[in-house]
Length: 377
Image (cartoon, rainbow, N blue to C red; front, side, top):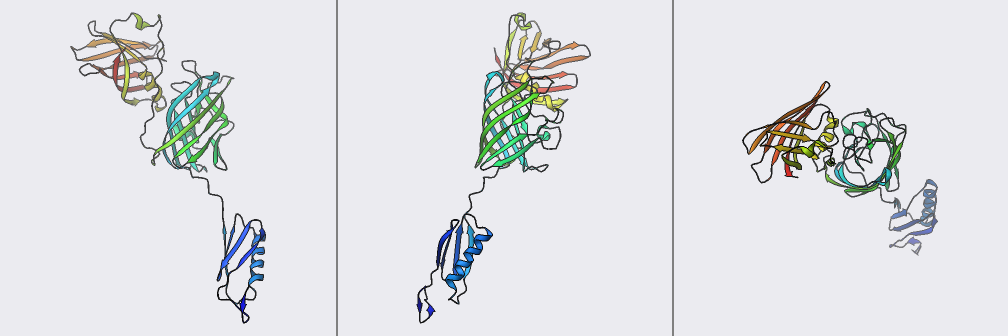
């Protein structure tokens, strides 16, 4: 350090170099800055010793500011409502490309957030790729409030891992399916993981889950997929578009429709679907069945048939009478099996460019009302 008459120069600069695990010390006047990726206690002592030795002849007060240049933090998971696209394959290689919803709420039961992924309804309208995967059973309106998954972080990736053993279906609505129809099985995930990365308001990741049959079968199911989620609202409970996939109708020569006269209608757009009574757990199934149903109306003969897919053959199809002179017709019919009666009633309005129907369905304690735009099949 240069001096004038034994005194430090007016313009005093300090620079202490060396290999202190990457630490760099620079200074100007009476301030010293230390920049390092990490600074341990031993490294602090080394830096202080170097600075003290260099400035011992000076009476100036020297401040040492140590700042760590840390790697940027992992982006935070944002609460809110997301639309989701899931693409992949399930048991037997059945491919799927589906849309659904993801709702992320504030943490519960020692988890940093509540994760509720819902694509279709594996319990009520099974089809390849349908999946409910939540961090808590309460994601889907019932079940335990205890965690169903463990949330792990590694670098920029986060994983949701099902806890073993999986809780029974009454406490855990998590499930995925691979096939369609009455014999389709819902599998409750107990192994594998859902892994994702955060990119501002989007999440992208993979799903690789294994599970046991929810109905006691010995077989195991698998599901492999990629997914992308885009946040559309900061409110986790916001109303967002989450399409319900209709159950496909498979017709053959043995169906009662074949010989039933009248105009054949299928559902083009579901305008409203409301649960009037019964369990909320089966509303999605009832809506999917309605979306795939066939309605045949014979106004001249005064009768109709309502035939939904994936329904009990002893209760459907329902037939009944048609009254009214048009363009609005009143439908009413029922069918009984044992102690259970199914009724279908409502109106068919043919006055507009496209016909519309408002129908109420009741089977035992379950009752729903639906309004839809129809199309002639």
